[in-house]
Length: 172
Image (cartoon, rainbow, N blue to C red; front, top):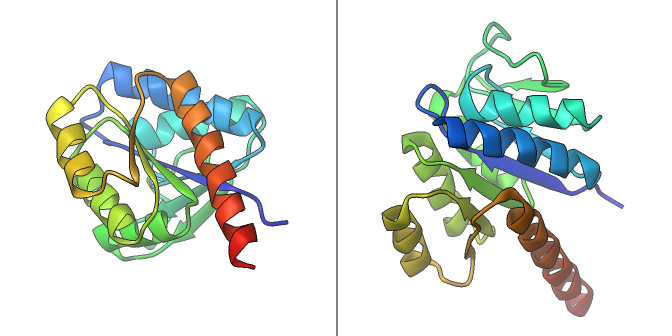
């Protein structure tokens, strides 16, 4: 059986303290569920915090890097995938994940959410930005979920995965 991959996306340099704390906790909780964590892989903001949280809990981490070297990779990334694609790597992040969590909001995060919704991937928004939440919900109400904290985020992931597994079994 293939492992579940959870993509945690969020701002790098512009991440808030709340974003970083939520990302770290998400990383830990994802690892505790024995899911694989996928991030943008860099050593800043949400990416770094989520990877560190997952490593603290013994999880496996994948970083999809925008460059062709590991100069800015998080120390907590187990598998660094070099793309030399810049922001185009956002599509790889989305397509490789079963569920996307947007932890905070930034321009790169917005593009990842839009790509996820366009590709029919469920997205959980863990953000205090009500305008962004409303925009994405209006664009894709069946695939956009809102969470107020990390515990609710994990519960939503479980619900989404369960529903995805039911749909897959019914298609067989």
